[in-house]
Length: 141
Image (cartoon, rainbow, N blue to C red; front, side):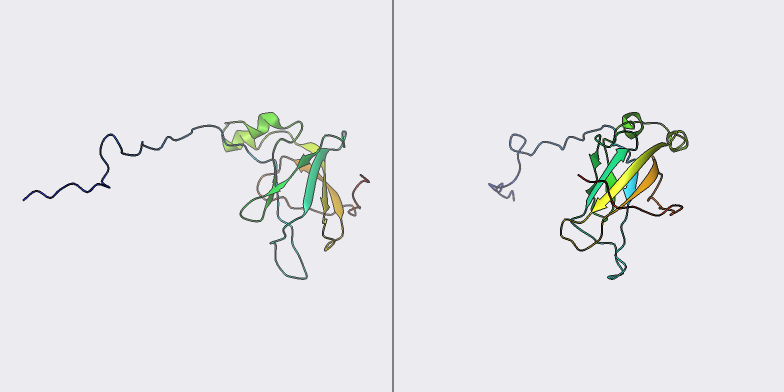
């Protein structure tokens, strides 16, 4: 016995096309920064403004975006474009000479005090701030 074809069954003319995979370079992040709220004992802090710029050029700012893991990442950082789009092996990629940058963190909602600190970037993994000198308030807008 042959069963009739369902009107919803895919036929060669109505079948969905096979998905197309986009293959390209995924940018490497020069900075991954997890910020910690000591009062809440957690790192899920939304709504902060994190800006990074070369120490020699405060006007060339890049804005960090928070990813799904709650890590602020920076792309399109002035001076590190070749690093970001490199397809080099990790050992070669992370041997890139670092440059001096300034990181500024502000809270537009007023929950946290602003802070800024120096960072040699790119930094592999999550950035670890070692306070050899005291942190300072960010530069005035």
